[in-house]
Length: 446
Image 1: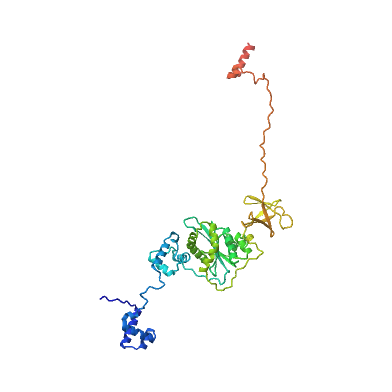
Image 2: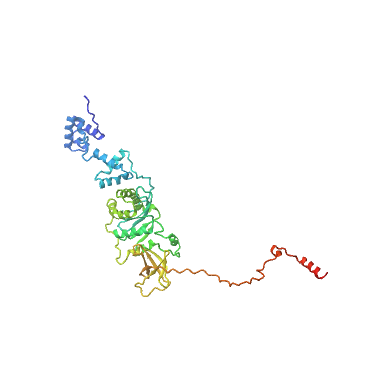
């Protein structure tokens, strides 16, 4: 008769040895309980069960039963079939787990999913390389004290190699994304729209932490710090931040703003899948989706700040943000209030300013697509003026100068120029001077 094989671990073997000694009377129940860390009642129960069932009494009764919350074979096959879909092929395990719950109502722990995937030879596509050691900077205590800004180019739409730039901002204290905005490339327009969304969603921060891109900082700023006599003008973004009383802090390395750099790694793994699931294939659709996606992302990844009081500020109602986030350039008008901008001419209309602007007045042109039909306003000493398109009259081309006609002269028919030439004249048989003298000598001297 074949006997069942019972396998005990080290702890169970020690417990079996102590219980056998207690049953043999070598040690007391009290000594056994103290040695095993059990109560006397537990020791009495184990002594009885070991006498009846032997070593099998020390094995838990549920050890050979499948857990009630274990993943069934049917669920495993379903998850593996979903994973084989092209849309999920480049999805990391953590994101795939979230999508299973959101779109297929399949709840599974990350550890169970990881075990299932690796057992089937499926590896998470998100690679991790050995990182260099960097000193961690503590988070700021309050939300709104500092935002980290950056832009990242990436092929966001599956099946297309075209790269677009995603502009974003993340709060240093909470890790919340305040806004995302996509453009064809990293540009001032993208940062302006992203910051306007930040103000709409949360408010105006105290400072922003960005790299040393010329959008944020003039290349001559370092020279000006060494030589105070050098005058450096603010960039377009810098002027907007000055109007909002926001300080720009330059970062000297990508690691310095590591929070938003890590955010890009997460979004580059997740957003292409999210776009593909929703059939998002262009920038306009992506920006509409990103406006609400940030709240879903923040609910999963944001942390509580050290101090709950936020320092985000609401914008002053008297400030028109369309004017703040406009490109500003200086122009000089003529006596009719006309100026040129981007190879076109415009005219400044009369405004609230007393009197008409004189010729050669320096005005500030505000350009923003949201500023009316032309997307343009003019500013002078704090006063705003509407601008209209001015098309100068076309000048008629001057006729080419005609040469004065020469007076005609009728030549008589018997004019020497018109008489017929002699044979000698016609054929060039002319006499030389010596021959003429010889003829005259023969005629008159002889």
